Length: 238
Image (cartoon, rainbow, N blue to C red; front, top):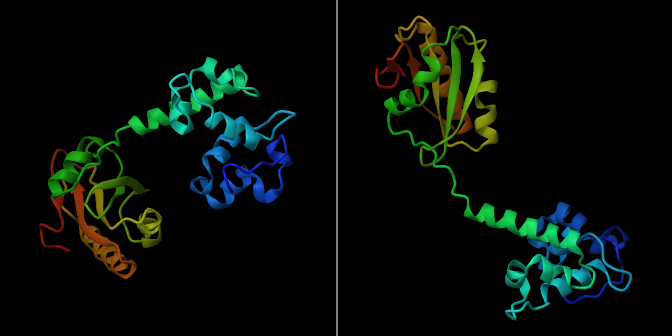
């Protein structure tokens, strides 16, 4: 839709379906809307003399005292500047300034650095204090991206490790959903002794084979004890 298009409707819900920015956002995504259409969604209503889209266009193209218009002008305008535009009262002006401030804070947010896994010791360091004192066996998976950074840590099951409880369906459900490149299996031994059992090895091999079929690498299986751990990969058991 052209930014300058005049549509003589005052509420968004009165607009023809093809011109309703809210419905188009839901159907096609926010990136497909013009600046005026996005602003119209925030404003919601126009006036008796102009449509909400016309009002949004006017807000964007009314210069402030610095002769700045457009999105940059919207940022620099004060609540008083905005509320002086016909059709924009204090309530709408504060809504716009609140939306602008949220956008500013989002842009200033620094993404939290994901821990990267380079060795079995990195896995142990990440989970040791959480798992060493658990009174039941907890089976977890670390979901990794292409850089071996941890996307999420999943708890798959709680209870004695066996093939019926740790089923490939449960193990790989979230890695598939999250498009994980690889996973690392982790479980604890409440006895404090991380020496792997024959069942630990059998379950690991079963999940490695399932991962191979799904295109998700199972890099290792770490068994955590009381302040000590064993990597089945390092032991040559898988």
